[in-house]
Length: 74
Image (cartoon, rainbow, N blue to C red; front, side, top):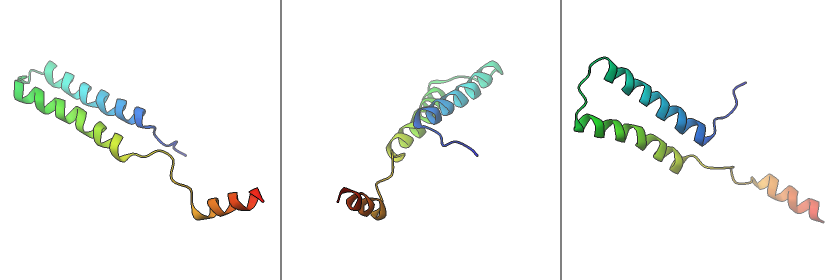
């Protein structure tokens, strides 16, 4: 079974993938303009930023977990 990704791993994988695509594009002779560079910068930074905002840590405890912890204290 697949292990869940960590945030850092997902962000690094995204940046490496886009950097590899940009490198292949530059080596194949695609012109690199300021507009294209800004587009690549936004494409590289926006998804990780959204991932950091959306991807939460551990889920909050369920009602059953809260009730079970109250029962164990007594």
